[in-house]
Image (cartoon, rainbow, N blue to C red):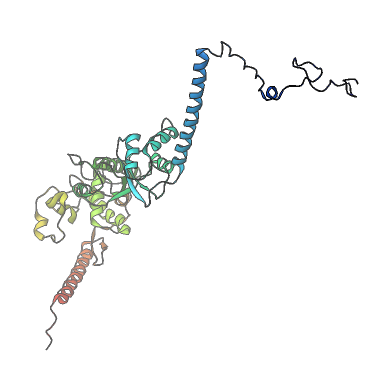
Length: 393
């Protein structure tokens, strides 16, 4: 029998040499004995090199650090953009000159951000070269993310406060208001500006603003306003300089607070100046007696006041007083620069808060008598109201 199969394949089984041939039977113990496993190939000298070992270690460290860095960046970005721990709106103050490290620490200390270090490093990454976190007081909404807080502080949109300085106040009265403001900081200038050189207005400012900064802003605004209106004045005005212009405007400012009357009051004083008449303005008398403090509210003007010899008593001096008597606003300045064209030389209170005007002394005297009658009637009515009620039987 031929050992080859029908397909001419090798005969079944091998001899011990591994060649094709007849199957050689083995004993049971030999069959159960494990065959020898070939030895693994020996490592090359190149693989054993210390340089290769170091490079492998270095690569492992780099991979681990990269994974750790990626995880840290992911955590930081998530924390930076997630809602913050703040549960209610709060105000936060960034002092002038504070750096981002101080700001971050204060935010964490006030429980506005969860991690000051994340706020610092991520904000530094977002901010460009010219960007800064600006000083001021900010309202931070509940739940604001670190990124939203950074954008708010970067914008400088801090909480604004205001101080109102109405028309007709003296410099001393304005300084008193600035001094008593609880938000403004710092001292006022040691030397007061000249009367009439501060612009009355409402000034907005953020916490940390210095009082001296507001004064400088007021002075610059008034100068700009006066120059602007002076340049548009009626060329026929009997006024020689800006100082005289502001002085007359301050008198008009103190004489009436009614907008429709200012240009007509201005025309009375302009007409008097042109005719060489004394201005006879009561507010100038008051300034000459009380100066920048102003007259006490319960102190009437006495007849003896009209005879007091001061540089501001326009019942005694001719022309304008030496300085303004208050800080005039835009309306009074414009009224003097382009007054109404009238022949009026007099005016007196009409008893209702306004004035009645007259071109002649006789007409004026009639108006004065009418005003005094109104005042007498008011006084009698007030006295009657003050009388105690009759006792009940």
